[in-house]
Image 1 (cartoon, rainbow, N blue to C red):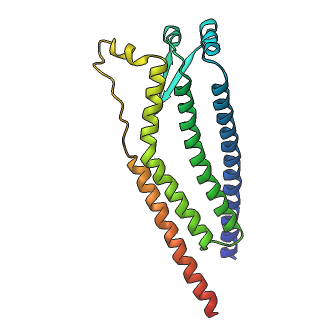
Image 2 (image 1 turned 120 degrees about the vertical axis):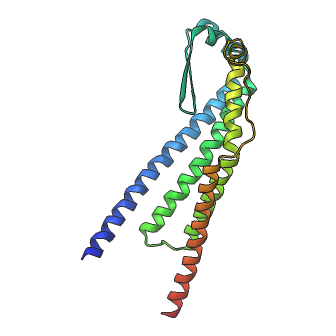
Image 3 (image 1 turned 90 degrees about the vertical axis):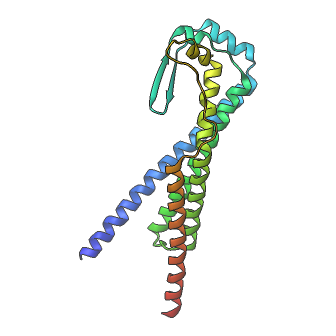
Amino acid sequence: MEQSIKKKEFQAVIKGLHVLFTFLFVMLCLSMVVFIGLSIVVGVIPTEGVMNVMEKGQLSATLHISGLEIALNQSAVQNFVYDKSTVLWIFILCLFNITMVTFIVFLVKNMLKGIIKGEVFSVANSKRMAYIGYMIVVLSLTIHSMQAYVIYAISTLFQLQLQFEQTAWIESVNYQIFGIHWSMLLCGLVVWTIGRIFKYGSFLQEEYDATV
């Protein structure tokens, strides 16, 4: 009786997680569509049109950098110099990150769906775990470079580096282009290892089914 209750509770948790990851997958897909649309808009609108809007409008800008929120004053916003290729690269890098995360969420969603059907230690789940591990490892090797470029691009668009260097208590501003997110790398390797364990578990399950 107790095992039956625990099994039902486990199934309820898995179904709830499946609904949650399905919702996340839909939202991430919508985000991808938005960034693709913005990239097309940036590619189509001429530079002169954007600069006219910047000059006529009273715009504000807030930067969110690793938990730090910087609200730019009006003079900093007016120093904005629009460069189409730079803005496009920012959107492309954001789209790359969102695509990677979407793929991970998609794999987790399908894995949860398989568990609901009773397919826990299966070859399909082991492959999904391995792919998730690969994606996390790729992100761990690229996320620092992408973040550094986005910060550099934004500072270039708003000419923030010149303003930073004119500040008395800032001597210089440098960007760390190459770096590894070690905790994310370790997480990816752990997930990949769990995938290999799932593969071995599916092999044992097939052997057990063959002997019964």
